[in-house]
Structures are given as structure tokens and as C-alpha cells.
Length: 321
Image 1 (cartoon, rainbow, N blue to C red):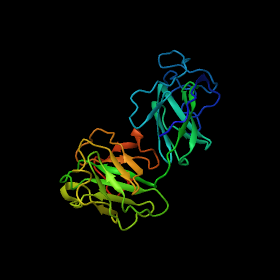
Image 2: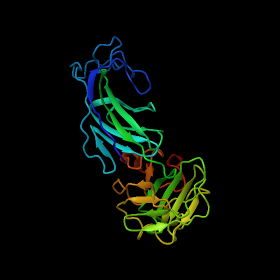
Image 3: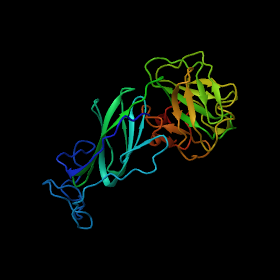
Image 4: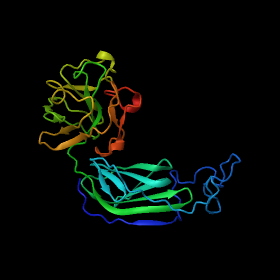
């Protein structure tokens, strides 16, 4: 990731434009909660500053809280944690009070608005062109209509090596280890991709993939050990028709650590195609870690979650459980 410059500013003012997630103000915009209770801090139709639950009017603009604890895969820039990939930029931010949030990337003019009013926001700006510099800015707004902004600052998307991403990793299967571990890949492109000669590696070792058949556009493929047996030990059987590529031995040196570790996928030239950053605490036996958004940067920690069903989904998308 390469940052080519920073020009950061903070602008706090009364807004003249309300950017709610759906383009309209939230419910009960008459200043009341709709249930007969006192005014609850929502903006009035007359534009007056609302009252809080304590009876004190909200006259304090929000501010962006300085980021702390950005992941090693992110860059701290101003008050933000930022990560970049070939097709997008992810921003994490924190505010002094519940706010809506908007991030913008120019010259593309791509605008992403949060779906909640909260103190913490995760915004993924996609799709963006690879290997291009963008000017990013963010804006937050509280329920009283006060706003704050930061930016613009410069960020550059990564160059595309191949449109393939690591999509799911099962470190700690219910079945025998390391045989039942898997790494699932996804072809995000519009044409088939050959994985023959590619390399998959963990912290301790690497394996060269032998794949005579290319992966079709949009398809999933499972990378497994030579001893993998579908469904053994209680793990889910792979989805019907999914391509399974067996390695000559376990994944990596001796299989994947149950505590989690970085997994790197590279092409035959050694260029890194995709990385699983190993960011989460171990979710437990039989529970995989899955990618949320295919185009989000690999290093975006909010884009990786433990399987919400408490299982794994080999050869199936998470939403198809």
C-alpha cells in the first residue's frame, strides 16, 4: 500500500444538507418519539435544535475520535484506519456520539453512506479502478444536524494480479487435522482463471498447486490436503459440483494452526494475489472465518467474520447456508 500524500482538515459546522442513509430523515422527525414521551433528540421539522433525553438541547457538534488500535494491515491516516485493495478502499472511523457517516472517493465520485446511526462505522468504497490514486474524504452528522469532516487525503488502490481472492478458511475442523482443513478461493472475474503453478503458503511453509482445469468465472474452489475426505468428522460436505484441488500433503508446513495464521496466495511469478490476514481470535472447532465483501481489501479487519451459523460453508457462499 502506497500513500502519496496527506492533506487533512477538520470542518465542523451546522449542516445545510441531511445525509441520512435512505436520503430522508429518520422516523418521528417532529422531535418526539411517537409514543408520548418527551422530545428525544431527533431533529424538528422547523429545523430547531432538538433536546436530549435529559432535557438539555444538543448544541455540540460531533468530532472524529483519533483512531487507535488500527490493524497491522491498515494505515492510520488522520483519525481513520484505512486499507486498500485492487477494487476498493475500506475506512473505519469512530465518532464522539452516534452519527451517520459518508465516505467519498474522487475522481470516481463514488459515495458510500453508512446504514446505521452509531459511534463506529465501517465504510467500503467499491468498485474502484485498480492501481489508481484517489482523493478520499469522510463526513459525519449527528441527529441534531451538526457535522464534521476530514480530508481530502490520498490513497492508491493496488494493481490487479488476478481477480481471485481467499474467501474462507477453516483452521480448526471438527474432523481429523490437518486433513479436513481447507482454504476456499473465489474467482471474482468474468473469465476462467488457471491456478496451475500457483503457490499457497502459511507461516511455516508453502505448496505449489497442480490444477489442470481452470476455475470458471464466479466459481469457488477448495484447496485441501491430500487426505481430505468430504464430511468426515462432522464438518459440512462441500457444495455440489465445487472444484476441489488436493495438495501433495497438508496445507502449508504441517497444516494450519488452530490459533489462526496468515495464508498467502501467489501466482507462478511470486506476485501476491490474495492474503488472509489471520486477524480474528480462534472462533472454535468447526467454525470457519469468511470474507464478507469480495471486493473489499484483504487487509480490512472488519471484512472477515466467524461463520455466523457456527459452522463452515465449503464450496458455498456464506448467505447460502
